[in-house]
Length: 84
Image (cartoon, rainbow, N blue to C red; front, side):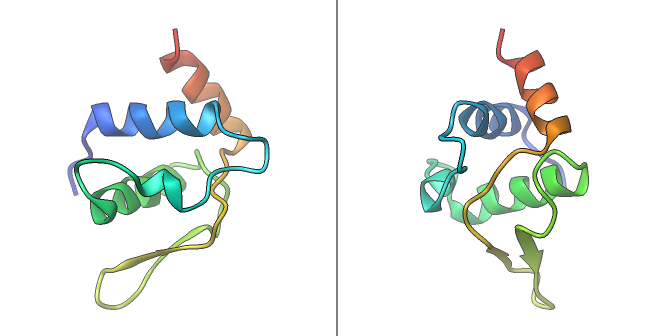
């Protein structure tokens, strides 16, 4: 799936500035829709930028989240590079 770079940047930045405990369901708030944001989170998890095991995909291709969502150390580093 083609990930929207602007959405990816927005999600990473929101997670960077989130409470240390991470973000809950509000991480999905975006005009593009919850499914697109969840897909972006899955992509970020696959790249090791959010903590493993927080986004899963069922056989139907639907994503479910284990909240809160938190950045991994690599995710913090990537988000800081974007947040200049």
